[in-house]
Amino acid sequence: MDLSVVIPIYNEEANILSLYERLRGVLDGMLLPGGYEFIFVNDGSRDKSLVLIQHLIVRDTRVRYVDFSRNFGHQIAVTAGLDRATGEAVVIIDADLQDPPELIPQLYQRLHEGYEVVYAKRRSRQGESAAKKFTAKLFYRILASITHISIPVDTGDFRIISEKVVRALRQMPEQNKFIRGQISWIGYRQTYVEYDRAERAGGATGYTYRKMLRLALDGITAFSDVPLKAATISGFVVSGLAFLVMIYTLYARFATDNYEAGWASLMISILFLGGVQLIAVGIIGEYLARLSANVRQRPLYIVSDSNLPEPTSEPSATGR
Image 1: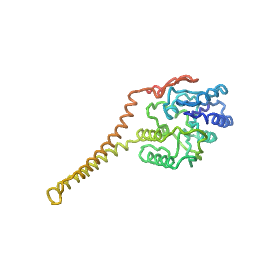
Image 2: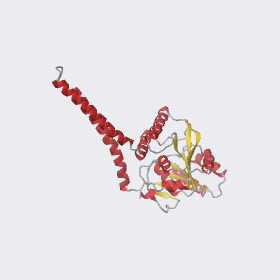
Image 3: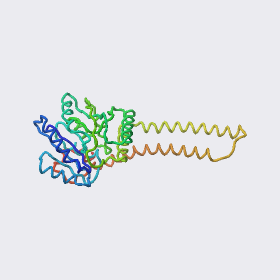
Image 4: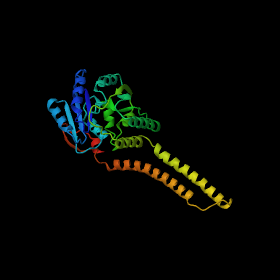
């Protein structure tokens, strides 16, 4: 198999058929003597997405699917597709048609110039609110500044990766997935192709601000210990300020006559110290929660139905 296309699906009934037609038109025009396959991963959709995928299977034997028992999340859905991909190269693309399938030949060509990863970098993002653009831009730049690896900015999961990278990803069974960060951590030669991201073709996005925040936390805690260091430094800073306040309080009490008993400064100090402590405990708790999830070794996902055989080795699916 020359190429596998992994497509995570969550309530995408408005886009599946258009995506399939555009993908098939693009891939049929490429020189792929070994053939290609589509791997749709239905991540607990509540609409007719699964029915449409099953109709495509009747029409095209190259269509494969994995149906989850419930919604496990976008990154886990991509992982399930990678676990079952058999192509020498794998394309990851969302179903909302914001990422153009017509870019795949260019990605594929760059891959065969000696690269192991070719990711699509956004020049512009159409159809998104100013708040979402700002928060996304801010997140990518914060992540780039505090992580110890080079994670490219202004990119999503739309990319092509070699079989070598897929094998490496299968050896990374952590529960809180941040695939674009994992691919950067793996290394090898990587490059990019720029494009203008289109407006969503139909339906509503499944990436709410809550899910975006969760993904941001996964990315930061998986590839940076800066928040822990910041908590430690803030503890020293607050302790120093508290010491200065204590000296001032003693000076005002015993060396001046304008000392008045009151609770305002005391309450401010207590609330300030308590807030910093709670922030530090919360940061530590985030890391401990992720360690706990990995120690439990629960499966990353549960498959309800599929027309694909189980992977011969499943480090991602078993959590081991």
